[in-house]
Image (cartoon, rainbow, N blue to C red):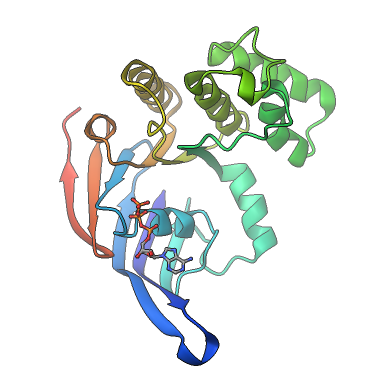
Length: 231
Ligand SMILES: Nc1ncnc2c1ncn2[C@@H]1O[C@H](COP(=O)(O)OP(=O)(O)OP(=O)(O)O)[C@@H](O)[C@H]1O
């Protein structure tokens, strides 16, 4: 489902005449099967976010290859990536990344607007998703009028509304209390089991890693180990 072959990435920092190469990912090889939950762990600066950004096309690798659902996405243009992301990938972030000036309904509707889905179908789909994530009654609330847990549910709803086969999550529980975290993790497991959604989750949190089938540990930009978990 997601295949990463001999992936290297360097950033260049500093002024033009003193540019320095910072090698951030080194020879990453990873094969994520459909229906897996994979957690990516590692110390701050080990390259986790860079890897996720490479899997979602926000940065281009220095070398190596990324294939998603059989498609070689490595050299996609910006607009190819935009289309591919809209059809294949959902995102969940620690900071939710909701648009503050839009209601929760409008936030969830936005990916469908971008896909050009007709109004009536959009409204129907968003209403279904609100029921699914138990947010009914909060459609008209702005993000600032919601609790952290509710905001995260809106962001999960936004990720789910286009039925993506893959969800990429960056510290999804980082801003949540223990109870809300447990609810989100149970929901992720449910989505994985019932809908076969593949999850790749960056985390510092042992609880999150414990719902994963497999944990990939990065150290200094390399995969240190991969650990199979028995769920
Ligand atoms: N745009 C950039 N330009 C230069 N260096 C960068 C850039 N983005 C990340 N880095 C460097 O790459 C390394 C890995 O960063 P990355 O954000 O991938 O780590 P991380 O494991 O996600 O860390 P954290 O857990 O703190 O989020 C760090 O040394 C960071 O300083």
